[in-house]
Image (tube, rainbow, N blue to C red; front, side, top):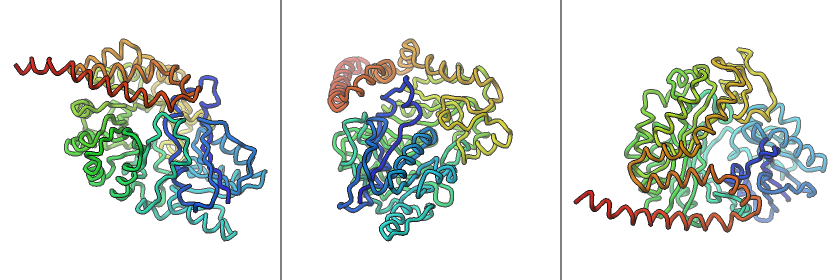
Length: 468
């Protein structure tokens, strides 16, 4: 059987302002995991349209397309193409689960929710000549699940080829998060067996890796055991977590000892009223500043996420948020416009209020206002979003933020990392377009390692003098 798996390009990939660096970060692990359920004699290919041109001239038996909201129209076009060529087309992912009737018009089979139970069921039915139209996830577990078939991924086309997932979902339920719809009807957070996760980590080449889990620390017991098992592996890694996790000293100590170097945290807003309105109660009454300081004390960088356009936001929210992040010494920040994804409580509430202004899924990219804000105009919200990025990543802001750290090594790393990531983005884009990542990334890792060793050498005499 010939099986083709496709990750269609998101909206921005069709724009003349496309930023290759953003969409060349991680390979499509979800598709590689589905491929692991197929027997060795099946012919399987995986194509990611963000990093390569799709070959649409082939004739696979089964086509599997992963659909996000801003790739929906492109996914449907690809699906229609392959159905016309006689392939059995399967659609799955967040957007399919949120709007199954829309997706079903372009597919022979749709998958709702995670695929650990539904994909093997489909394969059995397809081979028996009776594939179903709809498969809905009910039994959810990662215990014993196969590891991704990484040999099908084109590692040299990605900035971070060593990505890994050891859990699914998140134990929290924020109103704006896709999790509400995607994990409906079953467990919304579950993990792999610690030993299985550690075995996969051991199998990955190189030193650096990135956990793509929504919330690596969603189960502190699992996370702690994983950290203890990673200690001594010599890995350095990044992940996503919460303010709650960052304020857990024992858990963060174990994470740092296991090689944690940066943590993505959804702060979302500095307003407790906004947090309550969006059902993000786990951020309430917790010190954001203390969470950042603790991570910095452990030598970990912070990637802070913020959302603009909540009902409690006024026109001053952009400046307040950016100034606060700079004062805290945050290394990188991602900003978003509040987006009411279909299937979420936020969408239901805004639809009932008549505030949603468009259902053009290409605009649901957190860069456009697709609803009527309560505290400002749509134009002000979009301008403030772009202004926040501009102001946070000015050289003056980068230097002021770096100066918030007491150690020279942390200051230099801050300037080098933030500058290399944002200010050198056009260079990264050129490297990616020229297919040179396989050469440049290992070289950069060696240079950064040498730089860290040099800074430690410079700091040692100063430390001795201070003790004297």
